[in-house]
Image 1: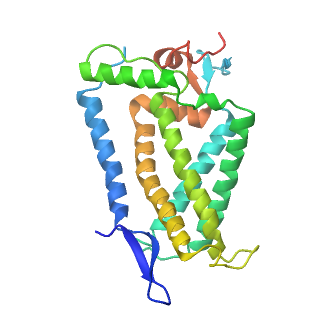
Image 2: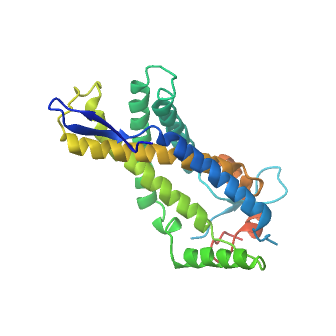
Image 3: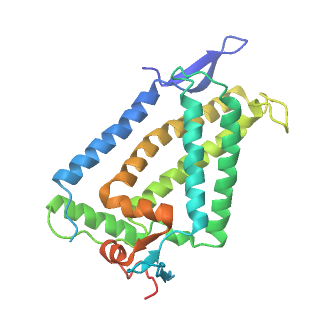
Length: 50
Length: 219
């Protein structure tokens, strides 16, 4: 998986165009992982407030 | 700073005022802007083709105005310390961690905002400000009523850094919005979501969820 998007300028030099859009799924997946992790934490480990 | 308790007409329990109308409007304007910006940024990448550029930059300008308004209001009319992460917040976070690891005892109650809420605010502030500053620079590429596109404002290398920062902020917002909505919908957090809609929590919720020494309201 590429981290960056690059293109070439008129002289053939590499020009940075931004982050790779493949990372979209990494960041969306991170959100899903955080949700599952927190839900498990709340269900199994979190102390109950009195 | 103590905040007022209001008895709502027809309600039996007094309500503790948490968010002023102007702050709630700011929150929801920001939410609509961020969702619009994410949709106009990523839907075309996912194959949904439409003329997204004008919607994107105009929404970005609206978000910038809203954030500038919030910055001025929070710096001049509110207390920066309200959202500042101080020693008491760090102690609160460590105490929650200790309670969690021991799996016994009662976690401490926060003031008006918990350590987690302040941390989320800090992350959103950093990411949204990054998106605004880099997006503002990228407006130089766009035909607007006020100027012609100028790709030579920065060098290619500098533009590359601007694009990477803008993309990183946008991608980070996906994770942050997903988790923010999740927490807003969790049953034990619904009182905060209601407060962001209607402005108040009940006196009982205040006593259950907050340390009255750290968030003082009128008796």
